Length: 620
Figure (cartoon, helix red, strand yellow):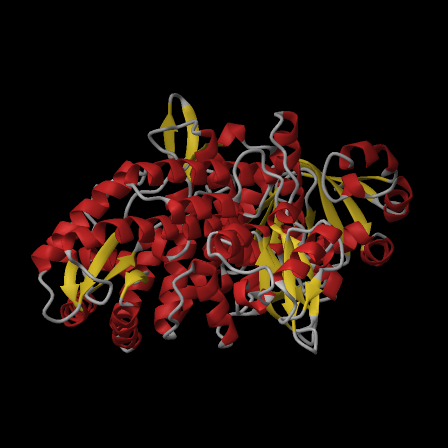
């Protein structure tokens, strides 16, 4: 080891990396006041596992590798220029769990432990990074994405955090007995497009908007002297002030609203948030697309709505909207579209909602659909319903969805396949066969069909089926072991050095398939954990949250896995939006990643390994 006492010359080098790039010069100066710059040859051990951390190491040049003992291996950690270690052990003053050594010769900046902890106390940026490293980097990555779209002219305002922050003026309210005439005058006086009806305790009991006047008053021939309550929408849907703008947007999408009534902690009227408050999109709005779907009377019209929905998704990506929210937006609109397609087609085949249940499978069943997605669906039949009649319906629905931009499934996982149009009893027998056999084909089917979710028809049949197969799966330890082995069959794309490793080559460029090698390990692992603990949720993060609520997963693990899964979905959505590799829409070229995104992606793949090994530990 060779040491140089002056660390100040390295301030400029550090300023190119987070979190140092956001720290003030005085904060950096204080942090480095006693730091040393040292040289170490390849192979030298820098910190032994089990030792108390005495200093913070920052890599200036070269590569450092961190490896845990084999009995707790979670994948190697590779550190390059600008990265620090061992932060967790340093901040909690505990023993280091990994051995850190030089993969190549390195230059390192070494900060005494006390200086580093004092620096974190004085710098909120450094403290934030130490407390939540992956989340910290994800926020910076999202900000960089927004800025890149701003340069291209596509940046929009990002969703705020709470509804309370969106309330711009007091809501105008009235009582149920006030006349329509006086109520409209009140709306005109205050220049508002909505009027909330409240009771004596100021609790909202109804709402009237400008859009209600023509159909409910003029066309209905009502007298202006009638009570306003006679034309109000009741009961009124409300959200608390602390609810997120995401909650409001989802409610608007589901119900076709343009306004959400906000209440305080005792349920009293606090204000109104409009769609305009939530989004400033150039052409398409969430409730606009949702409303157009509900009003469509032909498949051709729905095809236009589907195109608008995909454009909305691209606009939201440009906003930097968080990926897990994005996929829920996409899935909710797709759900609506599927239901409307069936509403239009079912009567022509004499099929009623009480006779069948249309179920979504795969990513649609998990609320994780992206811009590029095909069809995965099936049908449950009520007793005595003709399979042939149901198949005629399914074939036309599948064809209509294909017309709307949802390609037919190449594997024929569609309701038009006679093998996927069964009664509850026959479906239970089919699942029991998969669980009992446990061969590769059965495991593949299980991975698709265990994510089932009811979309149209008699949902009780889907609930009955799901409850039955959950019980069967959770009680069969051999099947769960086979599923857990299947989880480990896909390795996250990191080479032995801990660097990103290509999974394919397209036109001479090294690419990674983010769906198969990034998202799938999280999806498969969450499914196994959910089945093992009889969790009925189908969404990947909701499954992990439910398992954590049972005490089977630690809160810090849940946070890291959620962040990693969200980032992988985000990069995947951006790849689909840019459509650089049409034959592999989920592929991202390694050379197209920014240094920050490459750094985060490596951490995400390490988190995937940790989750896989968490599952493997349950089924050794």
